[in-house]
Length: 298
Image (tube, rainbow, N blue to C red; front, side, top):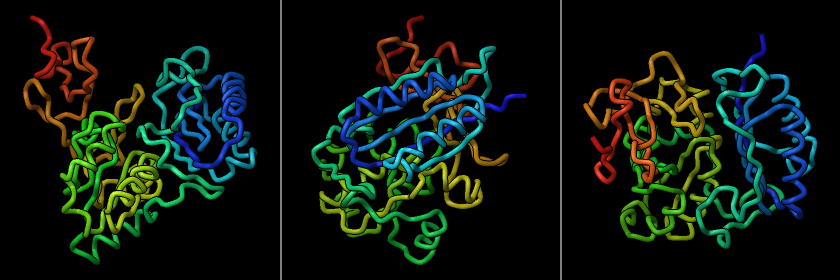
């Protein structure tokens, strides 16, 4: 039986012709029956694709054969399933685009990329190095590099969760003064797969945060290493039809339904079509989901 897989990947590397890469990547994915979303810029490649295992493997092999992408950072996870044509049910279509940024902080002029990746970012730590740092010091602070709603169902223990709705809100949030008390502490940034922290950690350093680290490979790699038996708590929000990932059979449930307060990790869009908020909603109230700004009409 065909095995559905999802591949999360990125690489920061200078690209002379992003549009040529876009055409190649689009044609490659289409030829293999893959769906997902790939963003390309002059600074590299960022994507999530899903499909049958052998097709995803062929995609990865051909992409890494391109010299600029040989150091592609890759994470695997289980897909939900395949449709009758063998395509991933976790993604509605294939989208391959060229953008100013492969992760949209709205600060393309602040990012410097060389042949070996981002220049001026935080110090990368592997999962076991993060745990060792926390065990050896009492001034370590986890700083969530995701949108605030993602942290509602999972986050690192005692993490600082910035009040941001989109990645583009981070620059203003960092400059607001809310986190100035962290500038003399050891700050460990983290995000889903590591890419957002490649940029965020550099933005923090240039704004006076003195000791900034980034969790290499993000929450995904940490969960692969420790499951739910260390400093991560809850479920990992993902931007596809799966909704979330658990790293073990004993993951904590941190979310609470906005309607009744019941513990749940289930998330969905606000019931108002003009609202883009993601809400934690239990199965019983799935049809009534609303937030204070956009209540669903009775």
